[in-house]
Image (cartoon, rainbow, N blue to C red):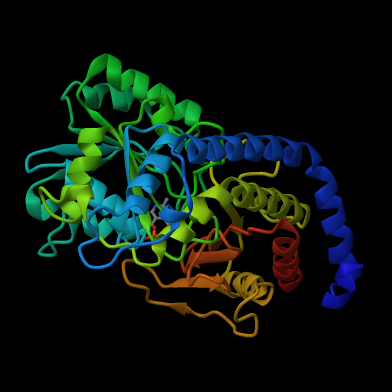
Length: 413
Ligand SMILES: *Cc1c(COP(=O)(O)O)cnc(C)c1O
């Protein structure tokens, strides 16, 4: 059998077998969601008459790039949006989210995050003095804490009395062990906002959430969303990029910020980007399904070994992340070393913590991926701070992700 090549201990093989047996029900649900979403994506290709010509890119200004325009339409349909902007030159999730915020907000505006402090890399975007942050432009970004990981609806209702310009939701937990905010919660927020402050924009950081449920935030009333193509929607195939989707006028504002006013979505050479972006989104529902299975398996395995995980294997998910509480710097490093060893690229190196740009603490990252830093491929990372959580995500092929996860488990055994 396959495991004989990997020198796993009897104990880990047994634990993995038991964990996998526990996962059967969750796996069946995941397959159903992936099948539904694959159908949705296929339909978007059909409705937009995608053909070979769309896979080739332009150079220079990139005027009249049919592939780029069609890709935007495909994304818009998939994400239940009026318009989408998918670009190789949105370099990351942080860039896409920053573009969304700077595009839409104006001096004097207030944005309220109802999911606590946004992801680490956004902290300087919001407040770093002298860097051209939101604060430098007199844009007020306020954070309402979650209560036991849940949205504080009283605080939301109170804040809406002042008619803030934006309510901001981070769907995934980021570097915190809370569960993701599910689509049903996002729907509830949108309904409350619509009923009490009609013009307030609901914006969602959709990183890691795409295709984990059958609906997306704009399907249930969100006005604008942003995410990264080296996470879920790139399907492990897109080589880089970010996207923004939502109401037409809001996405246009983000496009004016990204390129320049008047040009907006109408220019921007795609060169070799289109093929991978199309193939990636086509593969994404399946890839996310595989990553979700890897996540559920990891929860079951590590719970069985006595570790605290979030979410638990049987809990409802709305992102692909599993947090495993390692408890010490050494254990976090071992965990990441295990994942690295079980990855296709650079499996022979040992990840170390370093001072990554945009992060407040040192961060250790295991990523042995075909696309550098891609976290729809099997990867793990964590800030070097209490209580030393490893955030595990990705795995576009469940069977090999399992080997990586078992290697990490063995390292901690
Ligand atoms: C990854 C992530 C980001 C930032 O994305 P980068 O691509 O790393 O810049 C923002 N928010 C959440 C929830 C994320 O997971």
